Amino acid sequence: MDFSLSSEEQLFRDSVRSFLAEKVQPIWTRIDEEALIPTSLIREMGEQGLFAIAVPEEYGGQGGGFLLTALAAEEIGYHDPSMALAVFTLLNNAWPYILYLYGQDEAREEILPRVGRGEAFFGIASTEPRGGSDVGGLQTRAVKVDGGYRVEGEKIYISGVREVMDQLDWGGWLLLARTGRPEDRHRGITALALLGKRQGAKTGGIEYSILDTIGRHGISTGILRLNGVEVGEAYRVGEENRGFYVAMEGFNLARILVAAANIGSARWALERMVEYSRERELFGRPIASFQGVSFPIAELAMELEAARLLVYRAAWLADRIYKDKEPGLRPRDLGKYSAMAKLKAVQVNKAMYDQLMQVYGALSYTKEAQVFRGMLASLSYYVGAEGAQNIMRYIIASSIIGREYTK
Ligand SMILES: Cc1cc2nc3c(=O)[nH]c(=O)nc-3n(C[C@H](O)[C@H](O)[C@H](O)COP(=O)(O)OP(=O)(O)OC[C@H]3O[C@@H](n4cnc5c(N)ncnc54)[C@H](O)[C@@H]3O)c2cc1C
Image (cartoon, rainbow, N blue to C red):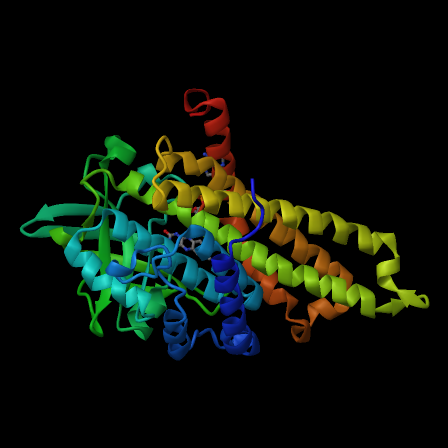
């Protein structure tokens, strides 16, 4: 057992840190305030090697792995606690990797190198208005036509709608659509690489709108209405009616990165709390001298360390499965660890901001303190992004008790 990072991993983290300290730290509040990640920054992040990190170089990625991706997501969460850049980055790592694993050459060649260079975004479009947790019940339909599929339906709470449709020249989502009968549930769903835009031109049949969210404004959350959108056969990802399983692998990977971003943001909040508890003097001494202040900090530091270990453990396992292809390990072995990492990291991040607000007192209620941006971002994962917390509990319970008992 070895708890240290290799020299390659340390070097990577150091270079990501200095890039973010220079390019992101000075502007993260502006990104949130103006609700826009500058296109030039997305390009620079691509040049820095922050997208498609685990995708092999011959497919346009960085040839790294998921531990490296998690280290990057953690640093991004720390340097931009409003999470916009973290969300953009984690989606642009997990879902392109799924396209690399299960996509066909035409779609991979078109999309992956552009993602790697910071010219395109590739996320996930699964959730529908009738509920996100019940993926097996989704209703968007993909009907077979000559040369591909015609898609009808509606997706909601989709990250990256403005970035794809209004900002970048290229991008889209791994779309889940029903190709089987409704009663087939999760066995009747196919994954398609839906491009919302290519070469600056919008795909016909897509109407979109942006939701007015309460936080992480730098990346949009929106609605996609699909009115007979044509998707070519070459853009099917994985076998027909196997899309649920394809997507579950993507969620396992994305949740590790969500968890990594949350521990990064929590580290930022913990540092602010430590700093302030030393500086703020009341009753003639620093507030850190009151155990009512220092003990919660101690508890949260321990919780953060526990969450970090879960995140690194899950990322390490992802690399054993996908990169090293270790015999005896299957993609579904990752589910429990990735759910544990997400459940815990989101709990810790939310608790950290809750405590930070109390330690800052009234200062936290001003925009000057900037604490609210991290607090509101942490809530996005608490309420559902990348899977509801109860669904994480369900995955863990099913894995340790047995699906036959928990379904
Ligand atoms: C900021 C943001 C960005 C998002 N981005 C994307 C995106 O890019 N792509 C995408 O596809 N989706 C996205 N989502 C949607 C996200 O995947 C869903 O929020 C999530 O799947 C939960 O779905 P829901 O919100 O419809 O809640 P519901 O599924 O309606 O659940 C409601 C409540 O019921 C509980 N619940 C549901 N089922 C069970 C069960 N079996 N046992 C116990 N409790 C249960 C849930 O825990 C929750 O508390 C985003 C969400 C947010 C907030």
